[in-house]
Length: 406
Image 1 (cartoon, rainbow, N blue to C red):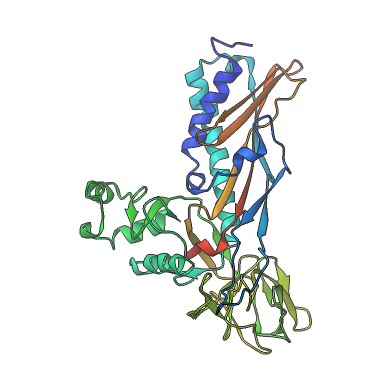
Image 2: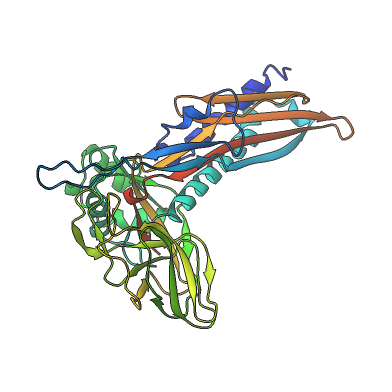
């Protein structure tokens, strides 16, 4: 049905452009598995299994020593369906397309895009264990960002222009611009714009591509209390650690980060021990129970084999050291390799039984929106809805680093 010279497809396309333009984080994610969901219409809950690269142990000497090709995988689930619902009177529906776009479609698309952006950055931050900087303090020199890049290199993430992407909020951007001198920036054409516009977005600096995103996640630590210690032995491959020494209302929040005494990180390939402790992130909230607390963690603790990630299993009574004070708040900037985070935004089916439905999907950018409208004769209102279905997965967590800030 056409209204004032345009159709429902024109409406969907008018919203698709600002939606795409305002999704900052999705432009730095891997979209390789997205086509596996199909183009005929996906739905919330659909799942794709993503295989992770195999790893191996080294043989010494001439004798053959076979080993299994032990592949690991994670699931990318379309677990989010978000939308915006609104209604227009018949009079409002007669607006020309430009007026309708400015007054309604563009604001709705921008709000949807920012929500996708916010969820992506939050979900990735909550599964990121490597971190640099000081909790609650915004970096004021490039040293912290160099440290983040160095950690990715320690974890063997590929380097080069377009390989590593840093998402920071406006405050982090403003503080670091003051610390960067023109001699540090290349290409030179970006220098003038960076200082006159106070805009670092899109620059390639310190071995990474910088992106300003106001939706960067802010984390609140759990209300920890006591002196947490490891309690007993930890099994190889454990995804939980048993601790004691908690007091009062001591609790951990999903996304809290900590290290364990004498449990050092190792090179993912050679398994050589690094001089820094292996960080862990809490994957589910937990509370003190009679001084004890079992904490769900990433990554699993492995002290041997092809997937070894620590120098040794934790000892009984080894101390846990958490990042930041109890209940403290910190911004979590994120540096990741372009293949570390998988994102899928997929087309939805067009339902029957409505006045009109349109599904537009840009296969180049990987952005899709569904728009549905129907008429309510009792109120003389056109009821409308936009829908987006997507999923996000931190598929190579070792190639993501949190940059702590205020």
